[in-house]
Length: 130
Image (tube, rainbow, N blue to C red; front, side):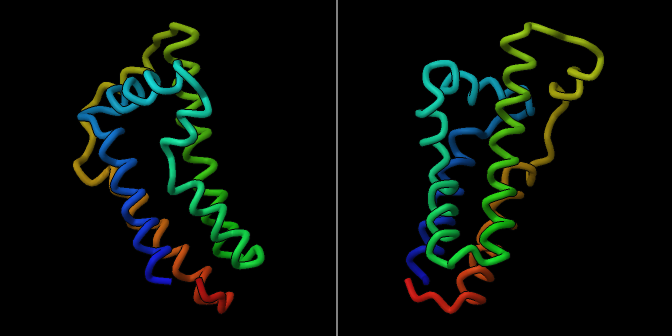
């Protein structure tokens, strides 16, 4: 269990490091560079999602594992929708100005505070030994 938890935390740090920026627009711009090249590459740059799906399968679809995968999926899908709306449609309006506001320093680390705990509870509740 320690190995899978360590891998999840390290992958979360990796995702934070390549997405980190001062504004949400900066984060989206970094992600869009990868997304524009290849969708599969964009998804592979989210290795904690792959680990989450692995945990889901190993724990026999435990409730916490389902919540983990759903949250990770919504996170990635939200980023993709924002990138398409902003960069592909070249639209700008008053609402988009919020993306240029400085982000709180803890913002990129929110997933690091949520996902490992959900994975821990999923593994612990299912009794699976990794």
